[in-house]
Length: 542
Image (cartoon, rainbow, N blue to C red; front, side, top):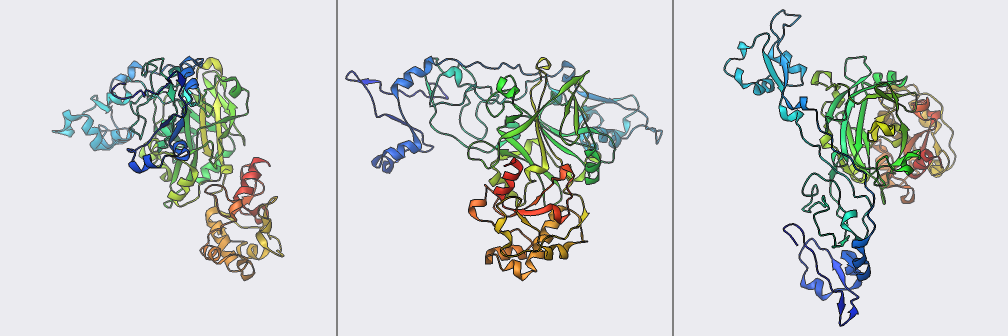
């Protein structure tokens, strides 16, 4: 049909009769003689669709769905110029600012700063007070349209018209594929139907789902302002601050990390203009963020695919931000308030103000995969959903601001603490009721071994907990040999397959009173052991 697409001709009538029993098949490789010799309905259904000629002919005449029109944001013209620094006198040395001191103000090394100012290559010491240094290239504040990624107005049908199929997408090819994006209604003639043959699954990144940013409270400061660790957009950052009693806990934990996403579309294919979204207490998300602490003690962020077949739900609580002057204020749970000034100045964190556990985070490296794939790859547990605060923050209609998805850790699970409590005497099979009610209590003999001991984190406690179980023969003998080997290593044992959910396959320790609501982290009276399925049901309120 043209250089990048093909239109396939199919039979409509033969000898005056409508043609039936035609199929359209998609294969990534050339069809083989063996395939042709063994064609059957099952093979065709697996690799394509059986054509309905009447629906195919009717597709171009389908009603055109209403689209939300959003204009790409253009950076301010003042940002087109290279960002400059006027060399001043250092107040401490009373000498001209050094290359290193100037570079540090902008997150650069002295070598990077010199590379931006090649006129000083011959003799950097000729730099003097009053000179102007380039500290950011013009293209970093470039006058260009941001990358667009969105869905068509309707979910793909078997047969669709072009007007309901195209979507905004900046690149020519879909990320990670050889397939041309249908990013213009002029790609095909309007009389051509578009058929949906198969689903192509590829690895994607958070930035494929919208504009994203990672923010944190700077190290060595008592400020509540959030600085930018990494961002894929200059146009939606503004100034952020957080307040509430929870801040004291975050300060003790060594920082506060926020992952933010301005989704190009929500899970139902809409933005906030959809009245159904506006009146709901929750919103569907196509992707959600989770976090974990890696083996080096650094915080990491991952994206998790939601939707049909996913063990991770797609519903996220919604909060409305109210305008207060030039600020927008959203009241979240646990007394936490997020204040955002969209047009405020940005605060980019420099290496000396970044906490060690956040120093290598890059928003462009957040991969989006099913939760099972993440857990198999990283080899450590993601933070439980109940440990994270997730919100879609919406704004007044006249503010013309897109919804904002926020994720941050809300518990003190990683604080150190001393074990308290006595547990319960166990008769019979200990974990027999782990899939019911609040699960199985902590055995008194295990509590006796742990009481009074201090642990640096709940992860360390959990390992010691299972090791204490291993030391009690009456408890250990209740498990299979393979599970006994796990318990002896301080690992949780596997539960029955019917109690597993996705990548969550082992028994889990649950806080009866959630930590965010004041529940004690290391009090065994506040702990129980549950199956993954029961754990999810508890937090769903069922």
